[in-house]
Length: 475
Ligand SMILES: *Cc1c(COP(=O)(O)O)cnc(C)c1O
Image (cartoon, rainbow, N blue to C red):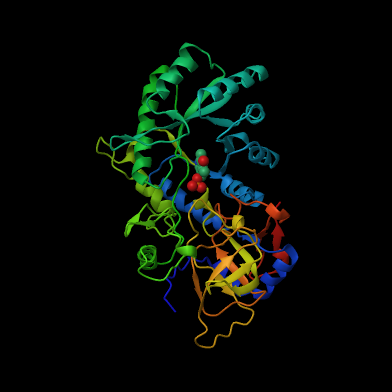
């Protein structure tokens, strides 16, 4: 067998406990169908504490808002709320849900990319802060607030921060160079938006640079300074999400995988991905072109450490950013989605069939489809866990497989990676995909072919034993 690179996932203890209960997992899939998403909301607490500790270390006033668009389960909103977090809502449905759950207005924020009148109306009626993206939105918020004879709390989303002489492009937000003048002109001088009550500034950057985020915070503090003499007080700067998660155990495996992928794309070894997919790389004239379009599944600065790298960055004045923030008295808000969901969920699917395709590769058909494990990344680069009904392995049974899905598309291959297994699974065996709660389960799920959406369970553990009755469907 041509050695396939491994990518061993980080696995929280609760997942190991489930793994040790195959009968229970089989029962859950019998009852709820395949695949099933299982959540352990308690894991959110650890992730939250990781951020809090960093803020506390620097004595920075802060509030964390869970970006619930990363997972649609209400239970996780409930959990975030009970831990004291706020909720970042990205649609009318999400906001409605949160209000119905009794979450207070000051614990909510609306950052939806498109805000129609109904959403703005609901926010204004309930006095939920809206993060405004453009002048038309300001107009609409003003109009709705005027009709209701209310004011509306707003923050302005900004983008176009200059990093190393180049502006960071984003389709979202106001340009950083123009926002002060816009606010001063329309909220103060012309009173065109006199129902808008300025509360703060917001950004959410693409990518995972701590340096860019530090620079963006500095810019926001500059803007706050410009606005202050005019009586416009910046209560907070919201730094959005995008805090890294480390999914993998080993840097060595990560480096090795990427090296092997390059070799495979160049034709210098057997393929390690379906149809030798380069995950962004391709071979042109015997050379590698393009760049990997994958999430940095292994990284050395995740969650709290990522936040710390931002806050401890050096400013252009030579002091630490955290000191500048502290001196300003401004609260730092953040909206993590993925990072609060680290080790919160798994997706479990049942093997439907095994077969040899015309290239003589093994395909393992799963009772699930590609949209039930799909992210913006070119592949989900974690080895799955196999639960064999008969775990005995005699030697030389090792096999390499592709996992395929139920949509009638050639490209419904659940993982693009070819996976080495100790032996071929049997029909009815289970496959556990680890750490899927952030974006993987829900963001792109669809029910083409009239397949029902996967059931979402949460494990509300009440004792030290693993009990079937402790697994409940989402609220
Ligand atoms: C998606 C999004 C987030 C959350 O991003 P993560 O990468 O999940 O942390 C936060 N804020 C805004 C405005 C977003 O669009």
